Length: 178
Image 1 (cartoon, rainbow, N blue to C red):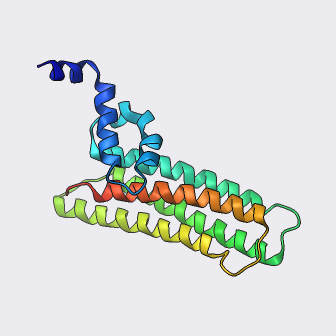
Image 2 (cartoon, one colour):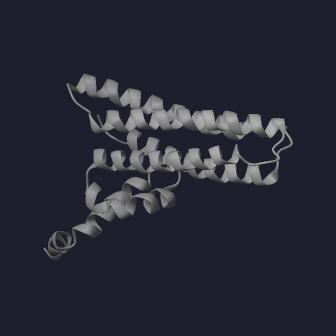
């Protein structure tokens, strides 16, 4: 009886426990929990809300990463190779932002029959998976090329963080039982 009273008197703790439990099924559980726990009162114990919030946080990070990498293109002294890498990476990140936006919009508007919802979830999973591919492609640009260490470090740091968030979003989406 006391545990029920505790849960009712402290919903925030219950919501954070829900997030922690769900994040434990992701590849980067600590990063997952850290990025989502502050939204506990919005997420509550709702798996769809958790996925919406995860996609929202990931989209926000993708936009920041896009802006950061875009700003590198204005940096003076870049070689032709570095300019091409930055340009390609900006395009990949633009695709990521687009795919995450589609995913978030679709997740927010899951409607229809179970079959229609499954189709929408399939699209969401495809878009989020494509985002991970875009991010990997950006990092792959560096292989075998001489690149300014600052440029490489900035892009790699941004992309690796974003990839963790995207991977976690996909894992959370995959954990929804339809």
